[in-house]
Length: 621
Image 1 (cartoon, rainbow, N blue to C red):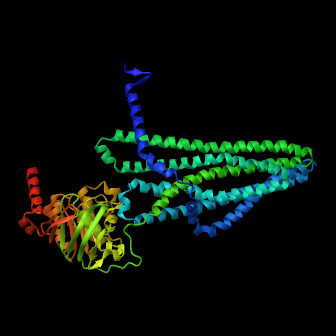
Image 2: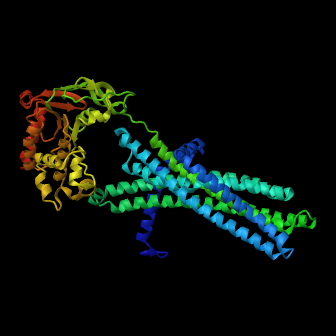
C-alpha cells in the first residue's frame, strides 16, 4: 500500500521530519528564552529610553502642552454642548439657539482635527530624530567594542539590534509617549466632569474600573511574557537569515539547501506559534474592556432613568453621560494597547541597552598619551595570553624586532602566530607582560595613534561596496588620486584595474565578488601601503596570489619595506627566506629563532617544515 488515509509515505515522512526539526529547534532555544522570560517590567529601563527625548524637550513641551490642552478641551466640551442643545434648544424649539450650539460644535471638531493632525506630524518628525540618535549611538558604540565582543556573537545578531530592534521602538517614540499623556489627561478630565454633572451616577459608573483592572492584571502579566517571547523568536529568525545569506555559497557547495530549509521551517513554525499566542492574549484584553464598558452602560441607563424620574437628571445630561462614557473607555482601551506596545519596546530596549552597556575589553586609559611618530622598535616582554581562561595561546613569549627589521612567524595552525600580531595591533590585551613600541607600552597610548602607524594585510581580504579607488583610499582618506594609483602600481594592481570597465571608478559590491581572490589581495596590499605605516603586518598576505604575481610583489616589497618594521606570517616558506629573523612557534611557545640559513643548519623544527613542504611540492609537481 503506497497511501494511507489519503497521504503518501513520503508526505508522512516529511511531516515527521518537520516535527522533529521543530522540536529540535525548540529544544535549542528554550533555555535561553526561559531565562529571559523571568525578568519583570523594568521602569528604570523605560526611563532610560525616555532620556533620548531630553534633547528635544524644548521643542516638544510647548507643542505637547498646547495641542493637548486645545484637543482635550474641545473633545470634552462637545458632549456638554450636546446636552445643552437637547435641554435648552430642542425641548424649547429654539432653532436659533440650536444653530449656535451646532456651529460651536462644528468649530470644535475642526479645531480638534487641526490640532491632532499638526501634533501627529510634528511628533513623528521628532520621533524619527530620536530613533536616528539611538541608532547612531548604537552603531558608534559597536564600532568601539573589542574583538572579544564579536568573537562570541554572530554578525546577524549584531545586525538585528541596529535595524529591527531600533525600528520596533518607532511607535513608542512617534506616538506612544504623547498619546499616553493625552489619554491620561482625558481620563482625568472625564472623571471630573462626570462627578460634577452627577456625583451619584458618576460613582456608580466609575466603580466598574477597578473590576476591569482586577480581571486584567493576570492577563497583562501573561501578555508581557508573550511579547518578550515573540521578540526573541523574531530576533533569532533574523539573525539566522543574515547568517544564511552570508553563508549561501557554503550551503550550496555542500548541498545543504534542504536541511537549511527544514531548520528555518522549524524556527518559522516556532515564531508563528509564539506570535499566535501573544496575539490571542492581546486580543483578549479588548473584550475585557468592552464587557466592562457594557456593564457601565447598563448601569448608566438603569440608574440614569431612575434619576430622570426623580428629577435629579435631565435627558440631555444622560446623553452627555453616554458620550462621556464612550470617550472614557476609548482611552482606557488605547492605554491597554499602549501597555502591550511598551512590552514590545521593552523586549527590544533590553537587547539594545545590553550592547550599549557592553564595555570594550581593550580600552584606553583615562588620560592616554598620543603615540609620537615611531621608529619601529617592537618588543614583546614576557607575554601570556589566553582567548579562553585556562587555555593559554601564548606562554611567556618574549620577542624583539629592531626598527626596519623583517620578522617572519612560522608554525603549525594554532601555534600563536596570529595572536602575536593581534596583540601588536592591540585587538586584544595580554593577560601578563607588555607590548612596547619604541619603549612605550601600547596600553598607555590612544588606539588611533597606535593603529594609524601599524598597517595590516590579512589573508581574508574585505572589500567594501564602492569604487576600486575608494577601497584603496580606505587606508588614507585624504590621499590624492595620484597617490592611490601610485600605491596600486607599487603592488602591481594597476594593470588589472585599468582593464576593468571603469578603471579605478569601477563599482564593486560587498566583499568584491566580481574580483578574483588574488585581485582582492592586491587591493588590500595597495590599501595598506597607501597608509604608509611604520610597522607593516602581512598575515598570509600572498597566500591567494599566483606565483608570477607573488614574485612581482616580493620585488616591490624589497623597496617598500626599507625603513619599516615588518611582521610576516606565511605558510609558503619560500616567501620568507630573506627575512631578518624567522621565529618558529609551537603551542604558544617560541621554539627557534634565527635566519633561514641558521635554522636550516640547526636542522630543528624549521628544517623539518621546509623539508616537508618541498617534499609535498615535489609530489604535487
